[in-house]
Image (cartoon, rainbow over all chains, first blue to last red; front, side):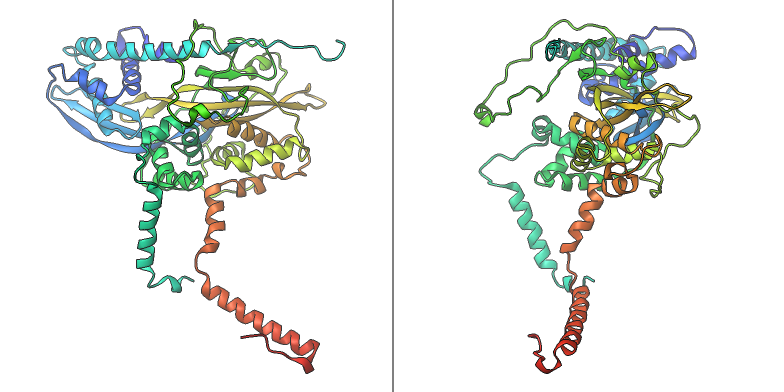
Amino acid sequence: MSASDDAIDVDVRNGDNGKQALRKAAMAVLAYSDAAQIAARLDMMALPAHEDLREPENGLVMVRGRVGGDGAPFNLGEATVSRAAVRLVTGEVGFGYTLGRDRQKARLIALCDALIQTAGHADMVEAQVLAPLRAVVASDRHRRARETAATRVDFYTMVRGEG
Amino acid sequence: MYVAVKGGERAIDNAHRLLAHERRGDREVPEISLAQISGQLSLGVDRVMTEGSLYDRELAALAIKQARGDLIEAIFLARAFRATLPRFGATEPVDTGAMQVRRRISATFKDIPGGQILGPTFDYTHRLLDPQLAGGFVPEQPATSDASDAAMPRVTDILGRDGLIEPSPPADTGAPVGDLTREPLNFPADRDLRLQNLARADEGFLLALGYSSQRGYGRNHPFAGEIRLGEVEVEFMAEDAGFTVPLGPITLTECQMVNQFKGSATEAPCFTRGYGLAFGHSERKTMSMALVDRSLRARELGEEVLAPAQDEEFVMSHSDNVQATGFVEHLKLPHYVDFQSELGLLRKLRQEFSEAVEPSQIKEAAE
């Protein structure tokens, strides 16, 4: 769970890399969440005018693994994915990608991605959308981790024969 | 030759209508929902996703419902659906080392960093039918205990630190990754193509081949080094965004098989490896895949190819259950014209036979 947590608990830094890391962290939380949860939280905000730069669409990605887990890549199989791009009236462009065929969810992710690039809406999206959804993600992961931990086992080795 | 099908449209329509009726079962019984299939027949869904080569739980559940529970038919439906969507590209290779683990066991070391975690398993159940499950059974909430943040390195990484196991083949940056959905299969096939083929392969076929290797047909002395199940994040390089975007988590099962040694005059002996990876919770599949992956490395490791499981052309040409069922089941389509010509030939041969053997006692076979 360490890598995904790192992606979420990202430092807010200055510069392009920091902004990109912030956008990726937001996308990770949104991709994990249901469209209805995202929409319900966005509905509570006054949003700037925006338009579809790329109509939401369904497609496939080829999921890759690595030989032995850490070696050369190979093609494991495909997954359905949805994507969209949204442009705000102020010019910011957001991109939305998510597993599954929920086009509306891809559009909502793109809209959030555009909003967090603006000075005027970033804080509100963080407070009203991302923070509460991030808490749900963390709580889901924590619950699963606790259920999993209860099945940790210690095997004792019996010595066979006369030892 | 399908001329005889002509004129059968009404019968075919009615047959499909009857199929839809039979599929529904007793109409007094509530219809099964996709959420029920996905949630309560989840391992069937995982198999359809893996062999259908399409990660989408809802579509796999729909395929199972439409196929009346026939998983190979469902896999066929999933494969056909793929052709309806454009492919945006390939993901970054997933990092199974960063998995949020829900199950992780090793049969080689009992004390592994991060511990042995049984997770949701059939292992150690008594395999007795449970009458309680016939209806109305409410299971207890899962037990919980404090989760540790300890890292869970792969068992092969631990062995690798001491050089006791061969390293994974390194990524050759820039080399294209073979894709058998895009190019026809040629032999000999590299390991990337072999693993893609095995990942889509019929579980029963791989199970039988893996079993045959254990019984001595291409023995390779396996240990289940590690099996892990859990969620990994999938990332995709989005050209429009200009950076790698997260797509969300998928569930994977991974099996690292540790096998007996190789070595040479210049290289110290070390364990060899077989690898299995599949969508969802697919333990038998990944174990069988890892056994067969190792067997198919015979050529690379300088082993004599004697057994079916070591023969890559045999294995890879017969592993796909959609191709296999297509060729086997096409036999039931009308072959009347082909058969007529065979029948004509047979009659001629029989006549020649009769005339040659006992020309005086010719009894024409019943026409």
